[in-house]
Each structure stands twice: as C-alpha cells, then as structure tokens.
Image (cartoon, rainbow, N blue to C red; front, side, top):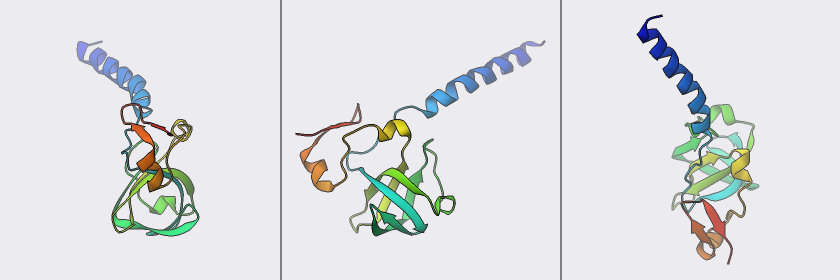
Length: 129
C-alpha cells in the first residue's frame, strides 16, 4: 500500500472513533435558558409547558447533536428542551435535550428561579439556595 492510502485510512479511522465522543460533549447552555416541554403543533405556533406559545421568526433549534433542525420534521413531536425567549416573549433559542442532559437537576423552569438560584457556567449546574 502506498503511504497516502495508509495515511488516509488512519485519518478516517481516527475521525470515526472521535466524532461520536465529540457529539456527546457537554453543551454550554446560557444562564437564561429555562427547561420546558415543547409540543410542535403548527410552527410557528407551539405549546410550551402546556400553554400556547410562538417561535420567533429567527428561532434557532438545535438537535441532540447540536446541529440546527428545521421545524417541519418536528411537527407532532413533544420534547424536553432548554429554551430562551426574546423580550417580546417569543421563543428565540431551543436546544432539544439528550437523556444525560435531562438528568441534570435542578434546572430552572421560571425566570424567578434563575434570579434566586446560583449557576456554575463551567459545570452547567444550578444550585438552589
């Protein structure tokens, strides 16, 4: 085999073994991200925590692999997410949570909780007073 083929094979093998691990890396959520359950009914109309809500025109939805997701394939699904809102109340950012991220508790579900709890951004952990 030529050196180029061996080098290419080695690089491919390395990429295949490291990419899945990188995809499971801890995602940094902002301090103003709240946890909730979103049901994608008829985007931009959604149900957030059982109440009608609306996605902002420039909403960014990130899947469990942290890649951007369009709303079309999500219609009919109900997902545990972290989300942020604009000053108008529209949903601006959404992160669809993986099972390991859902297990991180406590996580605030209201703005009042974010104002009274402590957040460690490096560890992505909230602490109640």
